[in-house]
Length: 312
Image (tube, rainbow, N blue to C red):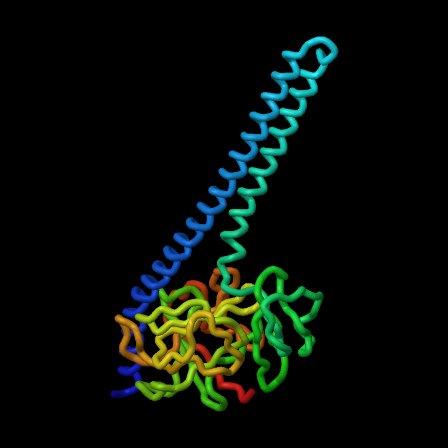
């Protein structure tokens, strides 16, 4: 097969698998909406309980007001005081309901991630207190946003310390070179990485681009999602022999799978990559350098330069 024919076949395969990737993303979004609906329902139930408790207090206050009013005489001014107390209780009840509703909404956002706090080096503990640290300090003990969340170990890589949020390394083995491609209809900012031609890259190791926690696995597409500090996510798609599970903590450079063609709609091995920030697709960048073939909505085929796996 000549190079031109090989490229045409690869492009046809890549167009065909896009519909499958979109279907997987739709299923992921529906699952996330269902989970948020359940959390919102829990918040509504808490609000209802607060409302019932407040109603009981108001009924008691109203009964007390009626008793005072019936007493007459020296207590003639007490009904006005009782009415004021009822009004105050109603205001308090409204505030309680408002806080409960906000709490339910916040839960839908903050608990969508499986883990927000991490220990860099050090010893794991079930609870810890957050401290004001900088990601530029390799020996920083904590990086977290909520002291109530459990703490987990994040092993250090050979270079030492946690990468700053949004800094990623190429997910390839030291010294191996890959070229990227995108095309019209591809997932926003996605890039398909290949080494050589044909099946040259079949079985190549896929490495984590930064420390993080595995948050999603889609079997039919060989897809792994890793969540990183700062609200960042990385997707690795079409892998075989996946070595991690949801909930696992992974370190930069750790092998998570192998390049393959796992998908109902593709035959050519390659690694589909996406980067996200706060659940939105963003341009892929390695060492803070944007990859040229990572385009929001490409209008045609776009090739990117060769990128080499770093020796960490």
